[in-house]
Image 1 (cartoon, rainbow, N blue to C red):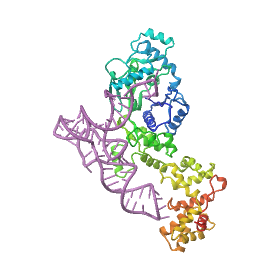
Image 2: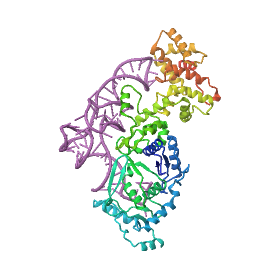
Image 3: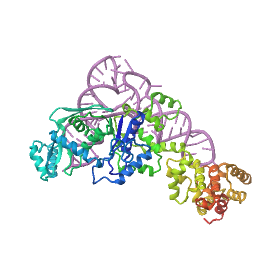
Image 4: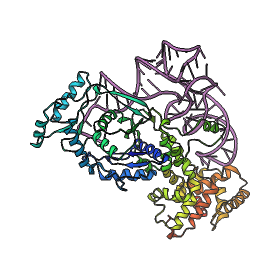
Length: 504
RNA sequence: GUCCCCAUCGUCCAGCGGUUAGGACGCGGCCCUUUCAAGGCCGAGACCCGGGUUCGAUUCCCGGUGGGGACGCCA
């Protein structure tokens, strides 16, 4: 089995396309097949090397490694259409010689006029066939004479074109609704329908899995395979990914590209797992029953397990709405599952952006790793980890003092805490609890009355991580050497003292 | 306009002639708790409409309606 993902490098990798890539990849990996990456850059005006790099980077970030492609090579290259023009030209030549294709000299204005007229009259806006029966020799002379022309495919008259779609079943088109389409543009570049067929054939692609927007291109491509005496591959068309308003997911819905979701703090395995669930279900009925009986969430699956289970027969026919809330939930799950060291790496840029960490010293990384139990698991995204640990780095006396003053027991509790903790660093939970038990004895307070003043004094916030974790984290941070590469952290005893003294 | 595709809770899926129509996210409630989250438990919530076929349709067929796609010298 050979499958391919064939993006055009004209922008960022859209999550809808990423899902198409994923489904191809899952099928290949689950069946010992080959996954090919081909760059469809025949549109010279819109294609850029930068977006090609971006697409490769985003696919790799998702873990969708390809076996053949522009950067890794392979036995059926080149893998950029812009490097395959000679191949297209020779096949076009052959089709013209066999009278299966012909030169068309119609101008863009002429065609545009035809199209608007057809639309106005309620006819399908297809090419009328003006140049279809021109004398081939004559056409040849005009072209050699320098006249600009496109090459059009001669669509047979009447009859049906049919193909089997692996997700939808048999699809039939009448050839009457297919106009003679362009194979080669007047500047010699191949048109999409021509290039894909040549490439898929020459690259021995056995299974074409692509978006539903290509379904009406398929009959044209089937016709081309037949004209060239080649066996068409199997086709499968995936329904589209929509926004909440059921319109195709686009910029106005918010983030749409893989790069944007990465920048928003999503983990690749969360995005991959979520994307796989739009239009496909890996879950069996018995697993649903287990889940109902309190079993594990059946939708959370590692990618190799998804590959093992993937099949086109189970792919949905209908379009799916992209639900970021579910992605967020899934991301939280994968953040909880990730090792602290990995999360340090993933979160680093956000922490660095706020100036809380500078150089990646072992001390800094170890310290940040020790913070992960505080943050991960209670937030949805990597960027929120920063919000969750902000109290460590951005503590200010004035707001803390204000909150302490506003608490009925603020002065008493924080005063006792300051006394008891003077000069000490509470590096672990037990040290903190020992102090709190003395504060409790001195003030006679307990529960919220006891802990709330401490929380507001030490974190300058009404809510946040549990103090058993937060307090030791503050003082572990406070004990770090300046060379550790972490912004200096004010220790707890000083926070307590200053939140009593500061004017508010 | 013509052609093609699609149609189960708000959302994503399961179901493939007979089910109390199931799971997941979200939502509501309760529990846990020194706060906010997280976590645990419970709950509300759907077969687009009309015809057939059948003893019996969510399921099969036809029509309608609705949504989407295509009809380029874009891919």
